[in-house]
Image (cartoon, rainbow, N blue to C red):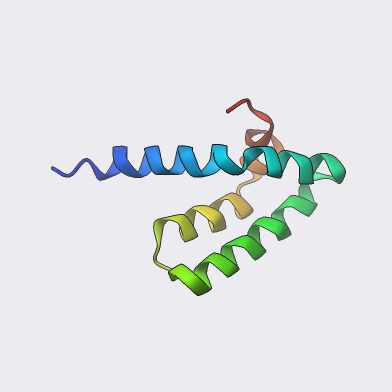
Length: 78
């Protein structure tokens, strides 16, 4: 009815592609395991100001724990 899956998917794409270049820089300066702590810290900071139940907080935690994103997804062209 509200097409929430579509709306959140669009929000997520915008959020990830907006930060992807920065994530690529962090990853290229070290290795993938060093990107995860940065993403986790970003998620914790975001949770403090927006709450744990915010969709973009969940996205940040999800990226920090995603082996696919850390190793492959971050390198894809937005």
